Length: 298
Ligand code: SF4
Image 1 (cartoon, rainbow, N blue to C red):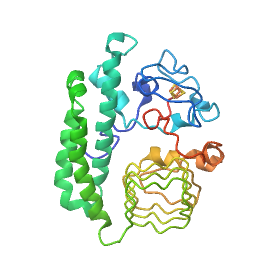
Image 2: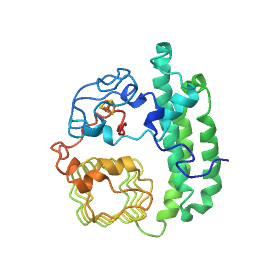
Image 3: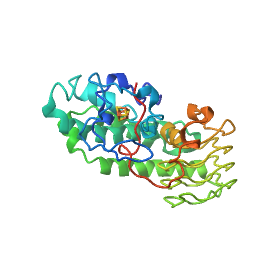
Image 4: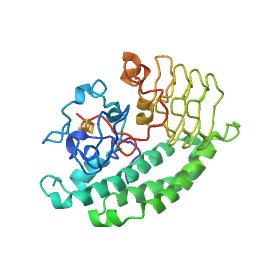
């Protein structure tokens, strides 16, 4: 039975074991996040023959900040090394299309594993821990299926079942706190400075460019919230859950931002570069990402 440690579950991206799948499979459009257009299935012109990024150390400076905030949750290396047993799309071009499709499905499965593992650490969600445990084990087994089976998998149906459990876990954690319901809300660019959002339901909320300076986001459910360019300077995210490092990396913040224990302060918050000085950070929604967000490659 797998544990709940993200590293042990293989949920931490290992770009060196991946065939650069996010740099090939996913499309992006020229924008504040990417300096050029790229179609799905077309290798990025910065991707080297050894699947490493030729501008890794200067992604932000070279106009690719979007590449620093994507997380495949370890799907890239799972597809490369487990599903395709180390045979790359360069070695076997005939598998490329299927490999990219499988990568998209695997990423969803790994993302679910991430949330399930986190939910199992939430003490208040204990009444649903047994169900969460079963769902985690089932999902992990799905990731071990062959490429053909994965390609045919009804991942949307599986997501729906898992989501029911995650919703219940969220309700249990936020119970009795009268958190605001902002699920899926359009809060793009909204001034929420100092807002009382403790235990709020912000699932899937659009918070792009929102001013959340000094906001109280303790125990808020932030699953899928779009925090690109949102200003979290001085905000309190202690105990906020279903928040990923990629979401945090896409936001702005400072040394006073209080974070959930499992997440780390993005280096660009302190360096003063990144989104705080990024001319595109306040420009509103630009859904141009590699899927949603690429992660840094080494
Ligand atoms: S990390 Fe970004 S810029 Fe570098 S190869 Fe991948 S897609 Fe291209």
